[in-house]
Length: 435
Image 1 (spheres, one colour):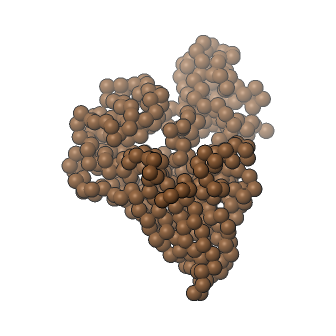
Image 2: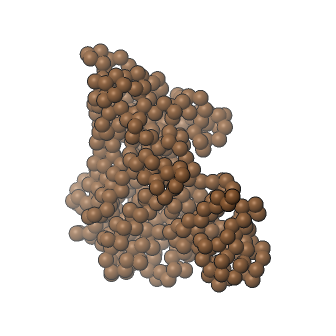
């Protein structure tokens, strides 16, 4: 039985899943531009054959094997099957490693249906012909491409990763946008634009919103780059916390390591470098089912990026105190965090979905690249309906980090109150040490 799946991705790419492997290739055959999404894949030899003139290519290398093609098929990613996960599987937080994102993670983002569908709809709705646009954190350039296709006169693309930015510029040039896309390598705080723009678009939010420092970055961009009356996309974002009984996720931390942490020894070394006391002094990327929630979600922070351009911006150091009333008996193991973003007038992006669509990836309501944030506590606490869980959630910069860096600390501390008695307390932070 051939269980191969071919899936079109933005940027004229095709994802091929076969025999436990995943490949991302160009969507067009280099011979006569046959559509590879309709090709035949041999799961034994890991070769794909173009449906037009029967040129066959090695999926791992892209080299032509048979047929008239002389040029290689471009392979953007080759590895083990990606985007395969189950509820409560624990992964290291991608937002904490953004400077190390490789082609594989960018392909993961390009294939994230929830993320891409919302952004494409919002950009198509908002951007008008002749507009000037800043794509902040442009990455592969897909948001810039959608803005250009909507008629933008110019798009400035800023990204820290010079390699991925150069690839974006090359791809957009091949699509006919060379004279309208202007790549700018570096961190936006240290850059200037030759003009103010009509739109600032960005997808640099983490699953807690500010865990990629997007709040400070977007506030700065709004003040320095956006013209009066211009539009921010996203317009506003809200983050939420909810206590959960995620017993399987907690057990993975207690007994082993996250899916992508390597061996237990590798994970122990990672925690040592972070000065963590234990695996619970870190948050993780995890899909947590709604059925694991012990209380109603509480609003953590709201960011209005479309606000007064001359304003002082949002505080990036804060403490928010929340109290949650337990609605069912269970074992409290930590908190789930997620965001809901208003991208444009009619498009929202909500990453709280929990259907991983194991049998049909197209049925997923989850975000493959963001997932939820799981903030564990060291010692799980049995709770009963009517108990109260209190938490003081803090974000701050450690003394050895400069303002504008990506080195924030999160701290979640609080307790469980039953009747008038505090029956348990917890205190976790992502970089233990003096506050």
